[in-house]
Each structure stands twice: as structure tokens, then as C-alpha cells.
Amino acid sequence: MKKFLLSTVALLAVGMAAPASAADLAAKPYVKAPPPVAPIYDWTGFYIGANGGWGQSHNCVDFVTLAGTVASGCRDRSGAVVGGQIGYRWQTNQFVFGLEAQGDWADLSNTRVSLFNPTLSTTVKTDAIGLFTGQLGWAWNASLFYVKGGAAVTRNRFTIFDNTTGIGLVSADNTRWGGALGVGWEYGFAPNWSVGLEYDHLWMGHANNSFSVADPRLAAVLNDRISQDVDMVTVRFNYRFGGYGYPPVAAKY
View 1 (spheres, one colour):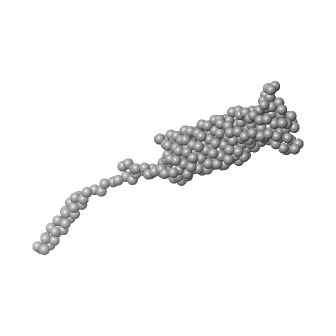
View 2 (cartoon, rainbow, N blue to C red; view 1 turned 120 degrees about the vertical axis):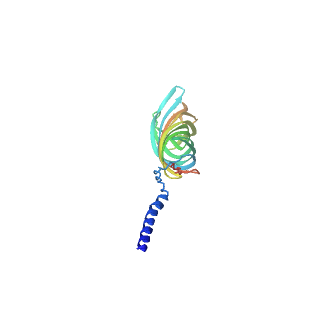
């Protein structure tokens, strides 16, 4: 009987001690997992790239004579453009500012019979285009929409030749400066790589070429005046140096 009482008391002591021990254990704090954070693309940094696409040159030729200015006709000619660009961008919040220099080889040449004298034809060829522009953009993560504007330069060659023989009678080269305005979209598909599409319009104004030639058909001509506008649509690839494409964002608890 005594042993039975001792066993009962021992069981009761163990049963009372177990809840007390469980109560002494501190509850494990609950930590909520941070929400996923979308990557943020940074456009800041120097970049270099290549471009290629389509261009169209619109030219009007006038002959200046002692009797006044005589129209020789207008013409359009489209062709390929290919080249490269280098620049720098810096981003603050969603605004992106930039400076860029672009140079392209071009094959924009057009020929037509002259209205001044139907026995003659004129050719205007543009073989190089340069742009020096500033950019203002709006970034939405890895997408960048921007406008650009600044100075433009083209290299041109003007030739007058005889329709019957095909012999060039006179030619003149000139480099002219004008203005440019464009709009584009660019997408960062990797931390330092981006691809984009851009449209530019160039206003090149008027340029005069003076020449002298023995052909009697041009004896009265003092010089020619050529006006030019150029449109360009190009696909661009850029590589940005340094910086980062998708920086980590510190989680807040």
C-alpha cells in the first residue's frame, strides 16, 4: 500500500511539472516574409553602340543666273544607312538625360533630268551623316522613351552631266550643317545591353555651290543652290560600361 501511494504521488508530480516546463519556453516570434521586389533598371553610364536602317533624302536644285533663279527640280531617294554612336546618360528618378554623337555611312543618291535644260541631268549624293544631340527621356524600369535634338551634318556631292554622252561636266562637294530632331524607344534586355528603334528628321537648309564650266549650256549659270531634308529610321544596339542593370533593393521589415 505504501508503494502504491508513493507511485501515485510521483505520477502527479511529473504531470504538474510538464505544463510548467512548457510554459517556461519562450514563444517563437513570427517573421513575415518580405514581398518580392521588382528589378529596377538603371540607365546611368557611358555607352557605345551600332545602328543601321533606312534613310531618305529630299533635295531641290535651283540654278542662279544673271537673269534670276531657275528651278531645276526636286527629287527623293532612299537607301541604307549604317554606323555607330557613343554617349553618356544619367538617371534621376524616372528622368534620363543624355548627350550623344552619332556617325553613319549613307547611300542616298538621286538623279533626274534638269528642268533648266532637258539635255542635262543632275545628281545629288549624300554619303555621310552625323548627329550631335542632347536627350531627354522617361524610364519605366527597363524601357526608355526619349526625344533628342541638336546639330546635324551631311556630306554631299553635286554633279551635272550630259544626257547623251553621260560625261560629267562639273561637280562640287560640300559639307553642310543643320538641325535634327528625333524620338526613340530603347529596351534593356540584359544588365549592360539594350536594343532600340529611333526616328530622326534633319533640316539641312540651303547650300550654294559655285563653279565654272566651258559648256555653253551653263555659261549663264553663276552657281547652284540645293536644299535638303533627311529622314532616318534606325535599329540601335548599345553596350553600357560600368554601373548595373538590375541593382538589388534592400528589403524593409
